Length: 535
Image (cartoon, rainbow, N blue to C red; front, side):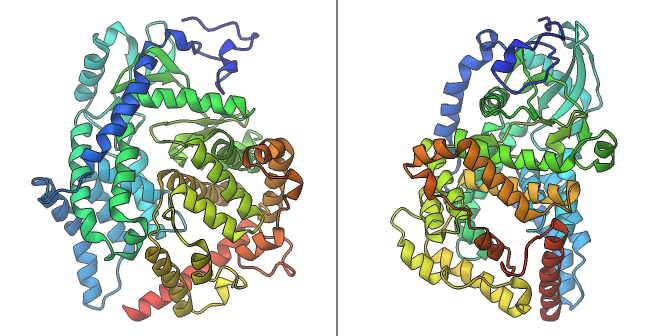
């Protein structure tokens, strides 16, 4: 495969949001592995009910090992608490991270999900579990080499001129190595851990056995509906076990971005022939790590624009195409010197049915118009609430018509009571968290943290107005047509959005992210004070 001359735009830019200097062109007709994608995806879906079926007996000794390692992780800090000593959160977090590493891919993946919850989970836990993104102990090089040669059916030197035996990064499912093809083309080789498929199936079986015992016992788990959460997790991680599905995700997201005119993102090209179940060879992209603000500023990159573009692209993918990258975090993003963002790792990609996509449209439109009942109806249609839910009763029980309350004015006891009351009401209505909503919220949490890093002085209200205006002018007629509403009836309720942040609309014209962080820290400190006083 020969790249076209640099002065000629690559022909495959019509097919996707790719780089302007390709090592090869994406030619779907030549990608033989794509023919297996549809039946593979269907087979994966068919296997899920049996994989997550609750069993009467625990699935083997794996449950014993899980209990032992998790007990090793949490027992010493909890014993200290019983003795009246303060809990060392940093120590507890480190022990949980090491337990996840020892338990293997499924638990590492859970840790990675938690690590994206900055502002939701304790900072010590988030910081420690971030190490599970790309600091997991790698497989030995001879094991990696054997997987590559077995899947490609050839000796390593028949395909690559070089492969660096030291991996660039290692995570739960796979690790990646820098390499060059025989013609000198630089690439990245993603290689699946050899035992990961077996271990994931064992662990999902153990989770499915345990989940029914947790119903109603752990409030946060109950809100997510433990058996449903296991099904969601199984669906997510099962698709990561075949790299042909991931390579197709790359092509589909790239096409979606191109059709939306989003050229500020760059998707790596998968190789036409070197894609198998456990090996994925792709274009090598680089740039500044997402946390390297100084490097970006030195290169003249507008970091506020990087965050703004990411937010718009996520919303467009959800609302207009029904597909989006489902695992945004700092290890999956590089900001290139030209300000474009290289988006990596497509093992977790959210796909919506048209019904789900229209529900998402209504959800976000209702949120911008401060229409809580519209949001409830959309959430019901997304699967968060049962189809026969009495929405008026939910609105009444959650006091959605009551004036918003500034959480910083509440005492710790009042804050906890508010949270527990809302959780209890939602549980009573059978609330659960569907996959697409979970991935969307997880991405929003990451972008929330990205604002803190890249643009802490961003005026949030101005950004909300900018994004709302963009969608109204760029996609207003298309959205109105799909939902069957009058585009002139749309009015963004900025005062309602301000109230949603817990501030007085009439007294607050701007709110920077720094201001928001101060408010959050005040709330967290009060809750920590309450926790300390009751321990």
